[in-house]
Image: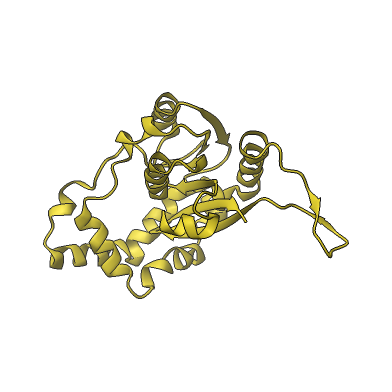
Length: 230
């Protein structure tokens, strides 16, 4: 919330998006911040609370677990599970990119701290969300199957719409970015900022949009986004 206030201002309206585990983080924010104007859930984890026995691991054991989580074999396996079009997207280069955040200084300590915190509890927060929500889901998601989780989101959220992303696995923002971007923009235009119009910027001969901006923040192997009035 401190980051959002810095970006959008103390009373600024914003939207937040989360993919996979980032969806749980987005749910936490949207359920607790009254300035949240819209929520985007992308193949989101919203019905698995906590992290089970891992939260009770001694720190040395947790550190060993973190090493396994960022290992090439595990990341390669996750890479194969994440895509519908594996030949195009589940490449060796994708594994390298998918491990970049794991190699950053402080990532090990941050993940151990997250594990020992007990993790998120999103399922208890969904009913508290009142803003318009867009649920986006890869039709062929093999990690979080849409047939199981999509109906739960549509039932738990008070104002939700659904967009299936066809020929797509767990990561629409990577496998079908144009279709996902169009769905997000359409929802912003029609449900969140319907009155926004392009205006001429002072001192410029061009016309541009003045309104919501977009910032990205990584959460583990997931993505969360915040939009605000800049």
